[in-house]
Every structure is written in C-alpha cells, then in structure tokens.
Length: 132
Image (cartoon, rainbow, N blue to C red; front, side, top):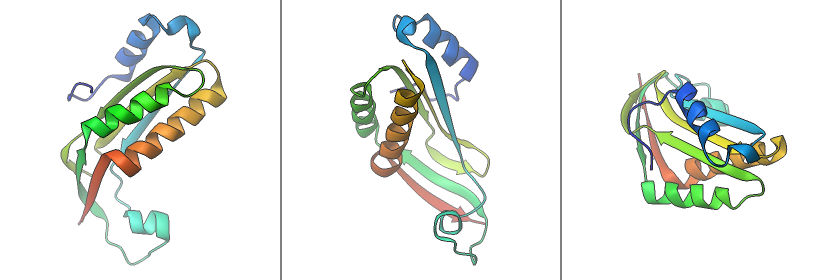
C-alpha cells in the first residue's frame, strides 16, 4: 500500500532508478487515471443522453490491490511496481490513480500495465459517478 498524498512522478522515477532492481529494467511505464466529465455509459456504451460527470465517489480494497500487485510481479520481466489510488469524493479532473511499472522489455511492461490496470478496475475499486 502506498502513501495517500498525491505523488510526484519525477520522485517516483528517481526512487525507481535508485532501487536495487534498476539494473534489470529497460523501461518504465506510467498510468494516470483521471475523473472525466464524459459519463462511462457514453464512452463505453455510446449512450448519448447522459449528463456530464461532476464528481465520483471512489474507494479501493487495499488487500485486493496488494494481491493484484503481487500477481503482477509474477509476470515475465517485471521488477518494479508502485501504485497510488485516491479515495473519497473526487471532482472531474482529479487524479484517480497512478501506477508505475518497470521491467526488462517493452512488451513485458506494456502487458503488465494492462494486466494490473484491468485487475484494479475490475476487482479492487468501486466507482460511482455523480452527474452534474
């Protein structure tokens, strides 16, 4: 589990590059999820009669997150993972999450990021959009 204050990606990368695993890492990839004004139903399902999103109630099951991260470390070539997830009432434009993954080669890192974000979104978090 990570700190609750919004992180600095520059600091995260500095720490990752100083980590004992840095010599094995040829790529870092970062994800920054943000609360968007466009409703999920419109973006994913094409619904056109939705109102803009004003806010989101967001929570995370930290034990499930830890399990997802542990499983991601089992993927080929993955040596560094760091996560930060917000909690509570978030406004449109606020950061929801940051994920940083470091690994040996691009395909491994891209696959791992996709895998971990998928697990987080389907198993670890609860999101409720509040329409404006």
